[in-house]
Image (cartoon, rainbow, N blue to C red):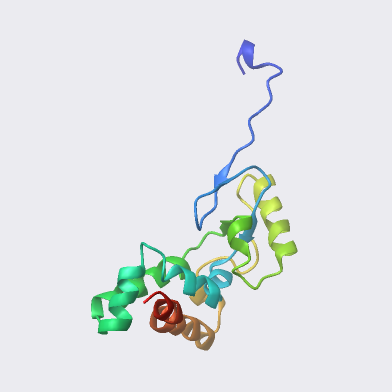
Length: 154
């Protein structure tokens, strides 16, 4: 502690939303697990037609392109395999069918523990879902997500 730091407030940490990067101040957001993230058709339908992923989805659906399907598989792996919890902001949380009050409470505990708190069932989705449920969501994300949206945008 230096002489001039006496009486200064300790700056509260801030973090970015793990899904879209918006800044979240201390205490804000919702804490989700990888299992909760991947169990959302709305999330996958949006994710697979974002500008960064649109070309892969077009290749997958329009040309049955193996590389497009492979890239969609890698995208699924990114979201399903994260061992740490996901900090999600107000702009993203409505994509998920979760108990928002509980997820907010978990986020509070996470902030207050200086990012050490882990919600139940944290870890990769394949370790926390049954094999059948995991495969069902994997199949949707890789093979079907975004198809209806692509047809609308042409």
